Amino acid sequence: MITMSEGIQTVSDVEKVNTTFKNMAAPERMAWLHEQFGARLVLSSSFGLQAAVMLDLARKYVPQIPVVWIDTGYLFAETYQYAEQLIESFGLNVKVYQPELSAARQEALYGKLWEQGNEGNTRYSLINKVEPMNRALQEFGADIWISGLRRAHSSTRANRQFAEQQKNTMKVYPILDWADAQVAAYFYEHNLPKHPLESQGYQTMGDWHSTSAVIEGSSAESSRFDGEKYECGLHLDSGAPDFQI
Image (tube, rainbow, N blue to C red; front, side, top):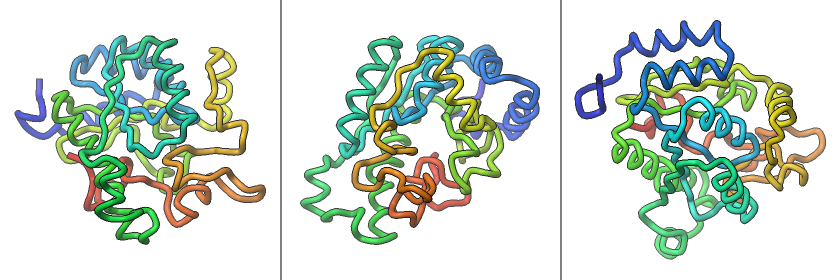
């Protein structure tokens, strides 16, 4: 078994996932990951609008997988409430990771970083998203990170593969090829609870200061960071300078 302390994940494993997933449905993919990689797996969740799908698949096919929740301190009140609902009803093994600097301390030292252009937003992402996730991966000793990222989310994700190398970590996306209609059908068929803000026009979910409801005629991408970007830092292309460990 290869761990983070022993060396970088082999490219052959990435290729193996990409080849195997092509002929599998999402439940089969999750069960296969559990069988193949076991304790090397960790799942991240934002407890956003579509998070219940991956969490439901995980609890059924990868029992008690560690679920990393990055709590920036700037989430919507409704997100915190929704997370508690899912954690309790699903019996999830959630581990909360927070930035080393509290929201109050950050603002005292640096001001409102999200109002300081690209440089401020990059610093914000590193402090509130990248560093806590790096810490989680290190503490769990996990070298395979499962995420609910989908190609349909945005243009920045349209060409992603089921698995990709992220330095010492292999990231895997079991529902990458799902269309929005498949997500909606899964919610309906499995009677999953919905995020409270979906009914208020939100189509994507992040921190309260960088996410807004979608205006008629606009796209979900335009509702993040005033339309200047979509990715918060956790799911950047592997060539990005702040890509995780």
